[in-house]
Image (tube, rainbow over all chains, first blue to last red; front, side, top):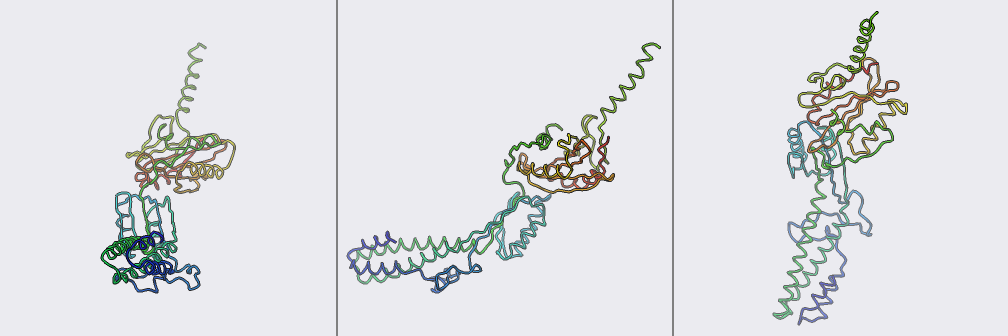
Length: 236
Length: 155
């Protein structure tokens, strides 16, 4: 905000006091809940719930979370299983993101994730399975706040055109251009976060991802140290 | 009685002993698709596509139960990074208790199954080990299990 304030302060020959006062007022405005403001464009639909009036954290059900599940699934015939799972994903409202010989990545609505993971588990032998949950609520709220503040500044800058000369107008335009760029960047980050919250991500590998996962561990029971694949294949 | 008469029974005894020593004490029904492999003193089986089975034995020291050794084996393999696949305990057709621990591991560019079946027989632990790529092991897995259920550790 300070950088922006300094940029505005350099705009001459506008009445400096008036400009600073206007900008300070805009920058100091607390971020308005997105749900309570009209979106600037059709593509800027507010999807986040309005925060609680007393500033408390939103209830758990309103939180925006990104779900990421990674599985290593062993199947005898990966082609068949991959095709079946891709069909199941589409039926569940999701879609494949990446399909290769040994990997399938999909996005699926979070509410259908459990059922889909059960289908995956039934399709073969699950060797590894992780489920990560990232809370995006704070990050989304911060970006929405930034977006609102920048829009407010942009709106105020528009009002200064009437009172400025050519040089001042050019500088206001330059500042507005920078602001628009920043707004687009924030909107882009918001879209990415909204997408992560809207779809759970599932990565299914049909073979071990980590190829060098074995380490040598010495057992006090000597014969156990002879139970390993290398010895078995070497002596066979 | 000349030396020839003395040596003849000795030679027969030695030959008998040698024959017994060459023959592995283990037996089980040969699963379909498997062939005996290696020296006659070994108990090794193999399929055309390379699924390998071998029986061997180690000393039951410290003397412990099947459950103890099965748990020790699982923990040891897990500590090394093998991915557990399954654990199955059963009785052979002759009433001997055994447990099979199957694990998986990456080996080169492939994922392999290492299957270890334990029988605790007095002072011996008899191991029936099998290994192959997952895609080759899976089709013969049931046949192999059925054959191991007929395993006789001998002696």
